[in-house]
Image (cartoon, rainbow, N blue to C red; front, side):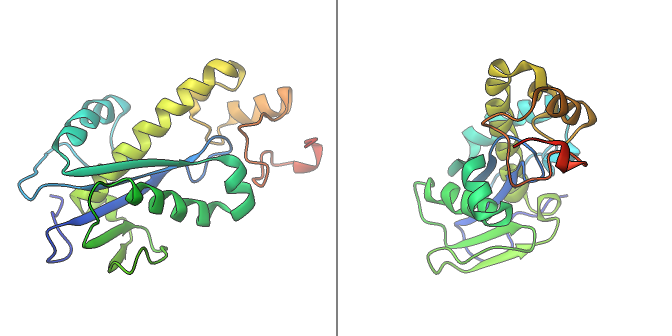
Length: 199
């Protein structure tokens, strides 16, 4: 059973990101403040849920939330500031989009940078412990998947619709065959034998 709040604050915001380990596309974060009465028996860490369940939960979460925000940080910025900083930046940007400033922030993982002097706590595997982080993980994942499906139309040979930019064997084979696109993260090791890749 997921817990509601970590702190004693009413306006506690949970935040999480998706797409950190991908070779292409943005890292996407969501931030959400849920009402105290919110309950959902299906909701869990998005990685534990099927795509069908995530798609089912997305409108429920968005309609139930007091406030939520979703933000992408794209590959050029990831290459320039590194993926950890880009993930934290995406979380900050998603909190920026909340129509109300949270009183406390809980973050999935163990790395964060202070946001507007608001007290915060990083929680390892928080997306499997707290409702708001789990909800943020579902929104980050579903919004990122939508974006990857869109750019799949432009470059169908990489099959981003299926692999969402993750380093699957199929994705790496396509990079080897067709080279890299404007959506690929040039700072990532796109192929195990990096030297053979002409950037």
